[in-house]
Length: 228
Length: 114
Image (cartoon, rainbow over all chains, first blue to last red; front, side, top):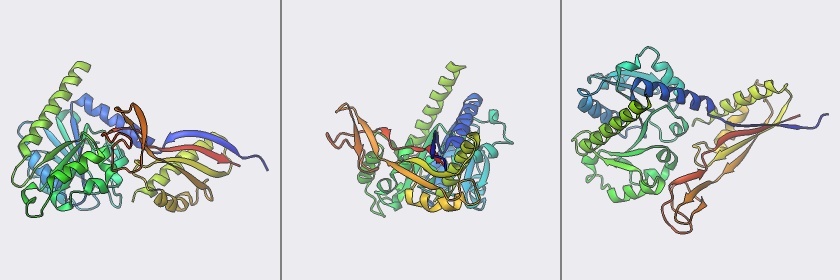
């Protein structure tokens, strides 16, 4: 019997996803599309937040949205009322979106026709963490009903996100939500993270978020203009 | 629970490598798994047998090295190990330390073949 031999590999297990996400990111940049993805637990208010954001920005930007769920196209129907072009990605039993699903969903879209693309991930605070989708910015949403320590319980997803959005602020008092404690939890898992506190229902805090996003889109267009 | 799809990715990379290197029977696969990778060791091991079934890796053993989280502390000017993923403070000077230097690994490092 021959001696065992060792083959060195040193390969990232998610290499295929990372490579494809890199290609998508390049395509988005070339087409001048700014991409924002959203992750949260089920029921945190991703769709309501997106609905409101699309309504406010719909007259200013050409927007598209991809929404992921295990089943149904209810979310796409909800968003259909806006000016945005919306497509549902149903993942079957898969608990997260991957770059290959985004790539496939974009097949029959001309990216040059959009300024802004939102990608709403499957409601899940665990599995989407490791999968790059080629986005410019990843938002993690948590609602006031979920408790202030959500970030401490799911640190990995908060760590991969760029911005935290606390939703359902209109009922914060009724559910005895401690905003300071929530801010501390977020800073403890992702020091320096940008936080917005808002309600898509009553519009509190929406203005600050929209203003910030528009600035980011402007900065990105400026950078691309210099590169080209 | 996405560990099965991670296990399947590992199988694909390993089979590809094996075929490129003239085949053989894989005894062990070595994986580095960071505490911030979002992948749970036990769930991955649990999925392993299923992922390998009817492939060239059937009967192989997945050896997982867990990589702790380390951050760079700009106050101490040193890398520091963190015990938990939800407490990004330097364990020595207690200042916030957001810069991760280690702990996101999800890397297949080697195959042992007989």
